[in-house]
Image 1: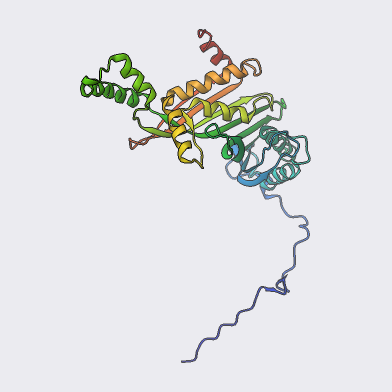
Image 2: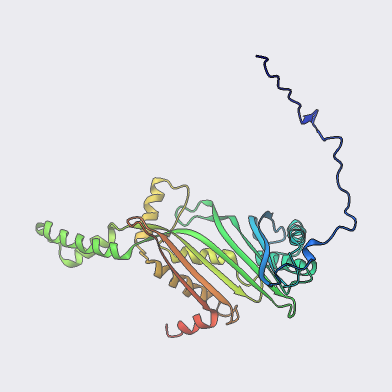
Length: 343
C-alpha cells in the first residue's frame, strides 16, 4: 500500500497574507441591478425589517461620568408593499458612522446615540416612514459599597431606544437600567418570628421573659427567612433625551430591594449585609412599588406627564421551583395621580 503524502502550504509567509493570484478584489460594480428595490412577488407592506445584534463598543468621552458599554444594537424600519427588501447595508453604515464618531460628537447619553443612528438611517433609506434604533448592553459602573465603603465595579444592564417619524420628525427617546440585588421574604420572616417568640416563652419560663423582652430579643437577633436574588428594571420613554440619569435609576432600583449584592465580601461584610437585608424584608410587589414611589418623588417636576414608565422586578426563588415577577406599566401622570392620596 502506497502511503498518502499530505503537502501543507502555509497561508501566511513572513507575516504577509497569502492570496490566490487569480483572485482580484472587486473595486466597483457597474450597472448591477438593485434587487432590494425590485417589486416583490407578494406586494404586502411589512411593519418591521432591520438589522439585529450588531455588537459595538460605545464610548462617550465628553460626559462628566463614564458611560462605556459593549452593546448589541438593532435598527428597524418599515418596508412599503412595492419594495422587495430593505437596504440592510445602509442601516449598518449608519450604525458604524455614528458609533465610531460618538467619542468626538456632542452625544452624552445612550438614547441620544440611538436617535443619531435613527436620523442617519432615515436619511439613507428614503422609503421608510420611521426608523427605530435600540441598544442593549452591560456597563461596568464604579461606585462605593454600602456595606464596607470600598470602591466596587458593578455590572449594570443598560437599555436605550429612539424612534423617529419621517412625517413629523418627532423623536421618542427611551432609557433604562437593570440591577441585581437581594430580597428577604417578609412572610417567612414573620412566621419564623412568631414561632421563635412562642419557643422563647415556653422554653425560657425561668428566665422571666415577658412579651416586651421577647420582642426586643427578636429585634436584635435576625431570625430566619428565605432569600431571593432579584433583578430590578426601570425603563422610561419620553420626548426629551438626557433628562433621566442611568445612575439615578441604579440607585433607586438597589434601594427598593432588601439589600445589594457584591462580589467581594469579607466575613464581617457578609454579616453586615445579612443584618441590613433582614431588617428590610420585601415582597416582589414591594420592590416595584418602592421603585415607582422613588421615581415619582425624584422626577415629578422633570418629566412630562405623558412619559411612559416600566417598573419591573423578578425574584429567583430559593425554596420554590418557580420564580416570581411583578411589574407596573404606567405614565408619569397616572403614577402621580395614584400617589396623590399619600401624605
